[in-house]
Length: 333
Length: 292
Ligand SMILES: Nc1ncnc2c1ncn2[C@@H]1O[C@H](COP(=O)(O)OP(=O)(O)OP(=O)(O)O)[C@@H](O)[C@H]1O
Ligand SMILES: [Mg+2]
Image 1: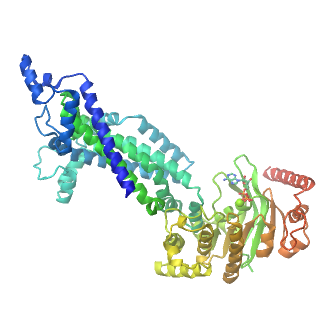
Image 2: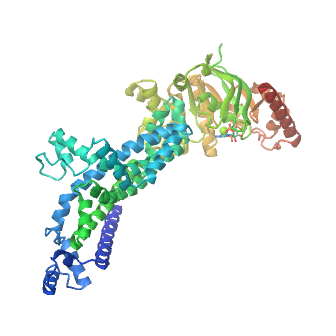
């Protein structure tokens, strides 16, 4: 109980720190949101009026407390460029990014996991060497370059997947939530699920490949260390095959040390959605973040950054909880 | 009577070509305990691993055959061998702290072979291991079955591992220094327990130890090893009464005697060691000739 309270408290401190830093940084950065809003030839009075309207004429400290006070009451301010409630905008876009990130994580796990197991089973052979080379290649290319490669091959050369947007525009969408993928699934509209997945597949794959390589490498290493332990040898002696031994005895204990690192890498993946969503014109929060920066939309940038920070903190919490769940020693404590 | 285990001319090498086992031949008859004695690095565990098919990846068996109940293991496919050895040979490991999976409950680790490999149903498997937990004198067996390894003491874990080893009624058990990692007070209890279980189940045991005192208590046959080479094998009373090899005599002198604790304990003399080195060199020479 105490551990959970401490945990929550550190989470809040982290979020507050992020709020302060982002607030200051975007105000130091060059560019004036008001100048970008007004048509050329606007008078100085127009500028001043708008400044006052968005509270930008006050001192930095005052601005911060106005903004922060609002957040505590659930008011994240109003977007300057879109002239809408920031919270509403962000919540509207967040599900698309969550679905993309989780789908990417799923792809990364389902590529990296089996490769790690295969490599551990074939340790010391040329198969393992091949897996190492593939991992190295996947890692040395960043996600947005994978995105470009995928667009060129499967979007342009052999167009099998959608490369733009979240869903085909011709379809009439029955959705009430923004979690299109989940909703299409529960509504049994598998035609829509298929369309959504076909649009998500390439951006998700681009995000997933570097993470898949990391998972495959770390988990394989960790498995190989576990494979020589006495209880694994004992399982072999009992007559279990190498694959059974890995799945039954080694995997869970080998996954524990990799889990934390995968959690950190997953937050990097979420960060990667900003560029990938732009590249694939995917209507998520990352894509909106780039527009917000271009327009110097301070309230919106702040809101988005806070949401990303919250996601990172939650991912770490989830990792911790899984860790405790998988480890009987911690669970009983 | 076919021996339960026969090893003939078994040699195994490290990557450089150095041999960790040199022409090892030995038998274990059904229901009999054969002790494998020797100093650290003599290759005792390596023989056990070769039988069980879990040699380290760097070690290669380069000659010799292993027969289980007359069946040549080398003639079997890897998976057939794994199943056959799994069903007929069990292992009591040295260190009970590392030989149990920290994230699985004891009950599941004790029954997995019976259920997953031998195809027993779960009720039958649990009945069987409850009976064995009684035999190894674990009183609160229901709690033990639900426990994770870290919740049990070293002695308890070794009892669990002994019970597991006997569960499938194997013909042969390889016990690799099963008491070395335990508290001195627990060592004797565990040794007595293994001896009792062995008699009741009439299971043959290849008992690895470096302690001749233990040999006298538990085994009928002894094999003395040095540097991967068999120095001497004999029945236990013959070996103690009339050791043939200078090294065996030296080992006997180096062992504290329980009935005579004041007797002098001598280390192995340099001339005996020099003699052993000569024998190893001659053995190497013969091996190189054999390789051509
Ligand atoms: N995994 C391994 N890879 C390479 N060589 C090994 C490995 N394990 C053991 N050896 C070597 O093989 C030889 C025999 O080792 P083994 O473990 O059989 O000795 P032992 O008689 O069981 O000794 P101990 O009483 O210390 O357990 C030793 O020289 C050892 O260094
Ligand atoms: Mg050993």
